[in-house]
Length: 295
Ligand SMILES: C[S@@+](CC[C@H](N)C(=O)[O-])C[C@H]1O[C@@H](n2cnc3c(N)ncnc32)[C@H](O)[C@@H]1O
Image (cartoon, rainbow, N blue to C red; front, side):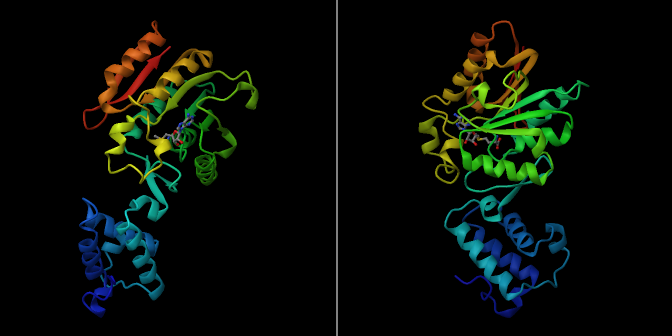
């Protein structure tokens, strides 16, 4: 269906353009008006508020073609952030591709706790972000804690490329060591094999396999970023087994969790670290979202 000829030439002006696109996106999303304005703003390389304040705007032929192509991608089921190629997290703009998870606002809770904890120290701390994906956790920490040194790991080399691109964009590439490995690296493979971690952060795949297969997100974002195994806890078990050898004295572990798995992750953490201070934090929706383990 051609987007811009529904009402003839006047639909090229911004209010009609927005309402036509909103109508076309309505079957695809709960927020069609927002998505329409975000997409048009992206194509014009302007802010949403700017395009809403300029009703006289029209699109060039090239921009119209680009809008039509992007709309077709959405109609084929691609998530808007992949069509845009970037997404906002913690007030910053991250490049993303279908190789990485789309940043979620819930993960800001982990980053807030991490930054608040790191701000208490004057001496540089070593932080690990396990399963870094697009790099949002490592990079927001590096930007906000200028003396932090970081390790960022992922099993997906394609994801690490995206993360490195984002680190370069935010001028923190020199402080983050990116490593392709299964959770934590062989110490001999990193710059300083003696490294101990002061803060370990991870937003690992945590959706139980069967649950995932029934979610709309299945096959729209990388399964490698979502599938937590039969009970959702496979990678938590493995990481908690590896962690003791890596953690410095008085260190902290912050793990984002699936909201229904609070009790199980608490139990797992208590059996691995019987003497640690362990608690769960809720997200803005009041759901269990973050496991904190103080060693
Ligand atoms: C839920 S995504 C989180 C990405 C990013 N940290 C974020 O918060 O948006 C999980 C990430 O863990 C990575 N991953 C999955 N299994 C892994 C493993 N065994 N070792 C390291 N990374 C893994 C995936 O490739 C994916 O990038």
